[in-house]
Length: 93
Image (cartoon, rainbow, N blue to C red; front, top):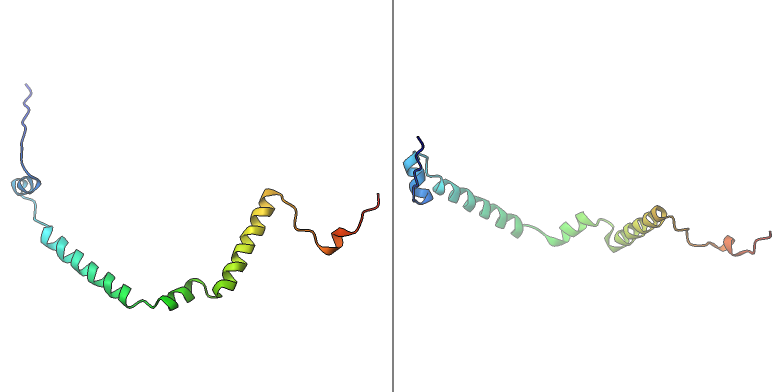
């Protein structure tokens, strides 16, 4: 024998029926504390110090970083290096 029971209730009603605790007030307190901490961290952040930490050598360091990755990608693809002054001499063959 098989019985099917359909219960139409809200999640809050189901929680109460099953005897589960109401965590909504605790969750709200945690979210409020998290929001306060995030706002305090944002307000206390000096953007210049943050940029100095991320790019210690400024734009010069960024240019060097880009050049390094450009050279690495060219080497990985097998492209030859840019010709230097010695390569311009005619070859005898």
